[in-house]
Amino acid sequence: QVQLQESGGGLVQPGGSLRLSCLHPRMILSEFVQYDLAWYRQAPGKQRELVARFKSGAMIDYVDAVKGRFTISRDNARKRVLLQMNSLKPEDTAVYYCNFRGRNEYWGQGTQVTVSS
Image (cartoon, rainbow, N blue to C red):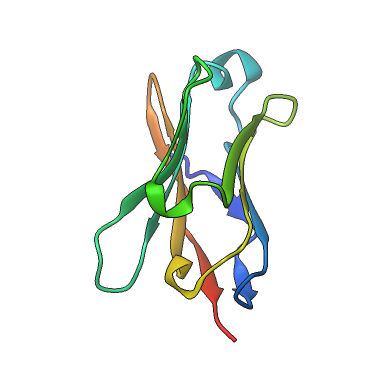
């Protein structure tokens, strides 16, 4: 099973920004546009939760905790999904996973985001 390739995590101070990126290494564009794309996160001792979801019909959902701070977008030219995270808080610290769901389902390996001074 192919894993999605994630990048962009790291350590940032409260109030800072990060951008996460995720792509499938072999998916072609005609497939990519049919997939729902999402970002999840899992903090230590907590269950994995949906952060933001982008549906092929242009519907976007965000968990309340990130509304107004995070933006999910899809880059069809590069066949990737992005998560722009602004005004980061310590409670955003987690491992972030991307997810493609459609004919098949794919997950990334996870990228650590740590918000700390």
